[in-house]
Length: 362
Image 1 (cartoon, rainbow, N blue to C red):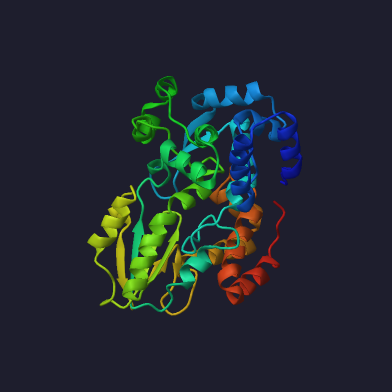
Image 2: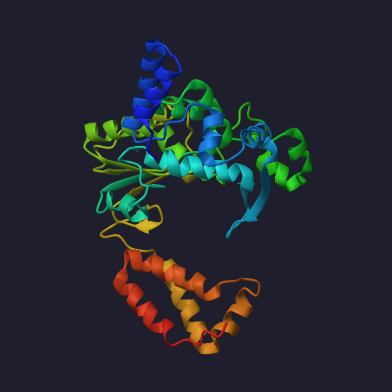
C-alpha cells in the first residue's frame, strides 16, 4: 500500500502548514514506510482506506462488546472449549488489520506457531534426539494479553497514540454484564474468569490474536532464547507451548524459567508441565522426537482402523454408524492422512493406496 509522500508534501505546503508540522508528520510517515506498514493518520483515515463510512466504523468499535458470540464446543475427551466469535462488522476490521499491518511485522525466530511458512514440524525439528525435553504451557494464553498491551504493540510499530487505542479496541473485547447474564450456568462457569478481568483481552476467535500474541511474546522469546543459548540448549515456542531440550546437566532450573515467564506477565499451566528423558516418550506439539520426527502410533492406528472398516463395510455404512451427523467424512479422513504425509510421506503412501480401494459413495 504505497503512500504518495511527494504529493503529501506538495499539498501540505499549498495548504500553508508549518515546516515543524511537515517535519513531524514526515517523521511519522517515514517510520511506517520503513517498516513496510500502511500510513494511517487517524480512525477516519483508516475507515477511508477500508472504503467504510467513518460513523459506521466508530459505531462498531463503541459497541464492540455486543459484536461477539459466546458459546462452548465439546472437547474430544472431556469438558468444553470456550469460543468467542466476532461478528462480521468487527471481523472485517480485524481481518484488514491482520492482512495489511500484522502480517507485515517481524517476529521472533523462536516463534513457530501462527507463522507463515512454519509449522509444528519446524517446532519439533529443533528438539530431535535430545537427552531431556521440558514441555511448558502458558495458562489462558490469549486472555493474559489485555488491551493495554495490545495498544503498546501498535504504538511501538509507529502508529499514533489515538489510533493505537482504536486498533487495540478493535482487537480485544470485554464481556458485558448483560451478555454474561444471557449465558447458561454451564457457560458462565467457562467464561467467568474473562468476565471478571478488569480490561478487555485478546480472544481466540479474532484473526488478529495469533500475530498479536507473537508480537507480545517477542521479549519473552528473546529472554528465553538468551537463557537457552547461555546454557547451550534449545528453545522454541509454538503459540502457548514452550519447549526446552538438551543435556540434563545444562538445562536451567525451572524456577528461573518460571521467573522470566512471570516477569513477562504470563503464568505456567502446571497441569501440562512435563520433563522427559531419552528413552521415555518425548513429544513436541503432538509429534514424537526421540530418534526422528514421527506421528504418534495411536494417530496412525486410528486412520488405519477407519480405512479398514470403510473398505469392509463401505464408507457410508461406517460413518453412519460412528458419526451419523458428521459432514465432510471423506475430507475429514483425507485431512488426517495429509497431516501424516507432511511428517511421514512413506507411511501416508500406504494409506493413500487403501483409500483407492474404498467405495466412497457418501
